[in-house]
Every structure is written in structure tokens, then in C-alpha cells.
Image (cartoon, rainbow, N blue to C red):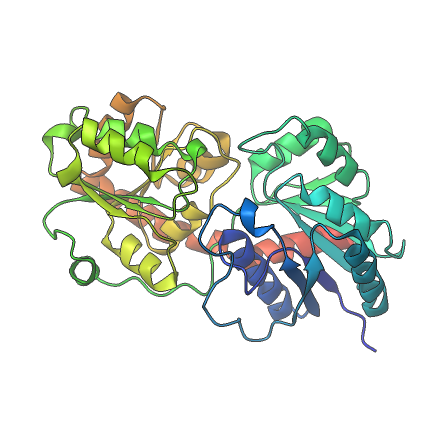
Length: 377
């Protein structure tokens, strides 16, 4: 039986969301580079009562070429042993554990404890210091890290966090742009389908709504000059992982009803195409961040980006001159957004995005990590 080069463990199809999508993309890019790849994903990831959204799963088709085993149970220790035995039978050269939540340390450690020593154990880390931290995070991170041979990341910021706490081989990466996104469509066509005003600039806030993402600050910015004196609209598109009432109260208090498009549901591929094609600027007014897949989406759809002054967000924006960096103050957010919406500035940012696209490909990322992993003894 042919040895598998890479076995990836973590959310993949049929799970929805950025982690699963990028897991699929990583596997496909490794295959395109001539590697044999299998994926193990979860048959049970979260207990239903702990999941804050409507569904953990996508209705979209599985990507072609991918071999995905839906077999892993995140909180059943007997399953971890069975999974490790299956992996040992497959005998991959490298197992890559997708690590984005400290609670996964139990499951992943249980698997690693039963793996053959000759298999390289690599962690692809999305978040090391969690956005909504708990007292046990550092303990679980240490438990997991002791069992890993090397670490790869999707941002300089996460790599720096790891280097402060771990003496290991760490690859400082970047967040690649998906190869499987639909093409941009004309702004007028996209807005017509959504029923949005074609004569007003649109700022897009995209993705799951969570406290650390700073939507409250962005809403307050729309009540500050110069935004409050403009005809700029704010489109809020995403499933709420906290009470929507909090934000509806802010909108009502600030009398922003006429300035808001509110679509409180998970964005599938088609709706994502419409939202980004309609937008003039994407706003990431996050209060904390390690990196964001929203930036790679904005690059694909050639939409300039406003980010707060966080290392995990601002690095590509500053390096590529594809938008502006703001503080968390609503007044500054308001001023920076109006600057970005000036036609001459907007054109410059779009031109710079187009120039930067090639360096953020999945193939480029995968070439780097293959070289990094295969040099590790």
C-alpha cells in the first residue's frame, strides 16, 4: 500500500466555516503539488447544546479529489484510540493537527499518545491565545505543545505568540486566498439582486458576529462625523453568536435604521459573492485578532480593507497598501472610512490588491510548509 504523505486532522467538509474551508484548500493544494493526502474530520465536534449557531454543516458539495473520513469524536476517549490505530495502519509520513481551540488538546493528545513514533506530528495553529480566553487555556496549550514536533501558522502574529511560549520549530505563514471562490460580478448587478441602493457607498461587516469583532464600535462610528453626514450604508452580514438585541438597541439608540442593511444569517458562497461585489470597503474593527480569513476574501473580490491596529490584521494591509489602519475609537473609524471611500483613494487600494494577489496563493503557502516540514528531523 502506498504511503500517504500528509494526513490532516480537523474540521473539513461537511463542516462549514473558514476553518473547514481552508482545511479543504490546504489538502487540494498539497495534492496539486504531487503529495498524497487524506483528511480525518469529526463525526462529533461540539455537543449540540454548546454550539451557538444554527448548524455546524454546509449544504455545499464536497470538493472533488478529496478523501475525507468522517470518523473522529472530539470528546470520546475510546474513539481517539481507534482513530490512532487507523492512522497507524495508513502510516502517513506527517499528521497535521488543526488547532484553533484549547479544548481540542484533549482529543489531539489522546490520538498522539497512540501514534507510531516515526510519524511526524505537526500543528497548524489558527489561534494560540484565544479571543475569549479561559483560565485553562494555557494549561491545555502546554499539554498539546509537548506532543508536537513542529508548528505552522497563518500569520506572523500567531508565530510570535508561539515563540514567546514554546521552544520549537515554528513556521511564520500567511493566510492564503481561496482558489474556489466565485468571480466578482458588477456592483450594480450585485446590489440589484440584494435590493441595495446603487447610489450609496457600502461598508461591509462580514462574518460571524462575536463580541471581540467590534461591531458595536463600527455602529457608533456611523453616528460620528463625517460618516453621520454622509449617505454611506453599513451592511452587516453574518450569523450572530451572541444576542442580536444588543446591536438592534445600538442601531435604534443612534437612529441608524436608514443606514443599515442587516442580514443576520450565515453567508454561503453565493451570498458572499454578492456582499463583497456590492461593497466599497470591508471593515474589520476587531478588538482582538490573530488573523482573519475575511482579508483574503476581500483580496479575492478586490475590496479595500479598514482594520484596527492589531498585528494579526494590519500586516498585509500596511505592506501592500490595500487600505487603512484605525484605532478602536468610533471617531477615528468614521474619519478613516470616509478617507477610503474617496474615489481616487479607493482606486489606488484596488490596484494594489490586484498587484498583491499572486503572493497569497495556496500553492505558494504549501510549497513553504512542505519545505519547512520535510527539513525537520
